[in-house]
Image 1 (cartoon, rainbow, N blue to C red):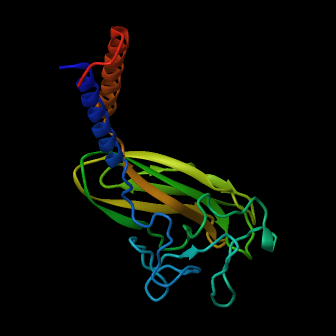
Image 2: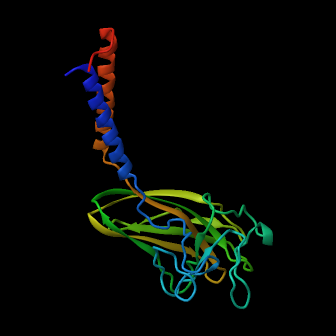
Image 3: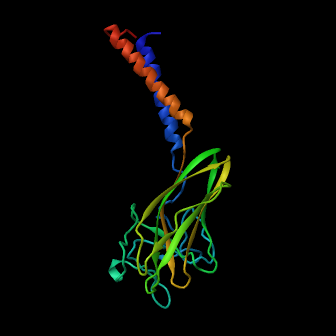
Length: 247
């Protein structure tokens, strides 16, 4: 087999492995930014208000979808909003790093429940779950609050973010979290459950930019590196030979 043919085979090998790795990194979550709703943003989440496409929220949860950090949600007796710079709040209240809608959940209500999405037909393996989150407080209330998120994928053990304290009338700023879960083949439920307190001075756990991708097996990267090494070795031999070969 001549040198040019070796190079072509090496290039095909690398291209094929690259496509395989790209397929492994395909986004598996639908509507991870909460942009798709049944009835717009700045509303409570649930039947009769607005639904989040692809997600299932717990009935009776005190949860909302905001269009931005300064938005307010019509409610009785007064509109519901979060402390921010426009209403005298402390901290650096801001939209999430990706902008647009975000999900807000009061974890201190009497009947909190998770927001979930079923990921279909997963292959057995390791998956990376990433998301942006923050802790805020409902406007009109005072007291230090705290919050966190507990995340689960399929039957893998649940994992939790750090518990973050939020000063009275303030905002923690957005944080980015990445977790890995190993699951078996089949459907797997992705679950986010906010936790926080104290009750009665509504703390809010905020969530945005949810992503789940498969983590490529180490053997994929090993084969890719071997392919690169083989092509490099052939190229060196060709260079030492002093000229191109004929196809």
